[in-house]
Length: 249
Image 1 (cartoon, one colour):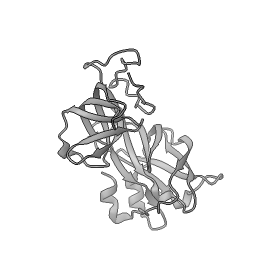
Image 2 (cartoon, one colour):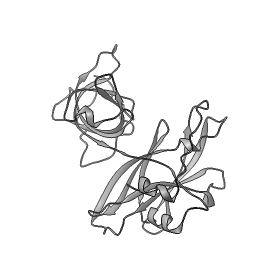
Image 3 (cartoon, helix red, strand yellow):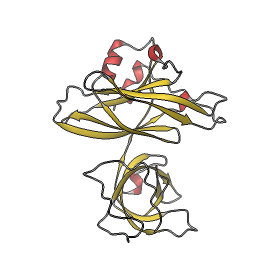
């Protein structure tokens, strides 16, 4: 049996089942849930997990027409068997379900950003549970209190509070609960395109990730190093008030 590379598997204790190890066979009653990226082929698709495993869907409950190349997803799958070492894939799987991850660029606050827009982005509590990089995406796993309403999540860079005293770019996870009452804890994962932070001539940049907790204090407060290809020209994705309808879905 191959070694499963689940370094960033989400800690969803009520969802995940870890009954398979290197000494056991695969069972149709076992399933895993992790984040990944869809890769389209000429007539089908496969999924590369954020842990680096290539999953070929030998069986699937998800129509390929509902997926797009490069789509960030949360995939629920059952391993059917190991692929041959000579093949491009690591595992043959049954895809039980796929949900598209929330994918956004950074939202930029500057001197032109209105108070109304800042209020709509929100300052409600949100807990950052984990972060990791997938190419130019910063993935954030988070928790918040809610009920049944729609919540807005954004990753914000503020030109008025741009860097720490050590020169790290500050990125703050912002949450607007839209008045939804705290009935139970909810979780989510979002992938944020941070390629606009790339500095020409450099291959990495340090960022400082934080969020506000229920006491109104900054939480997580973690420095991450974003590494990238210096030959790739970054694309600016600055959003203004007029683009809010695209940003807070």
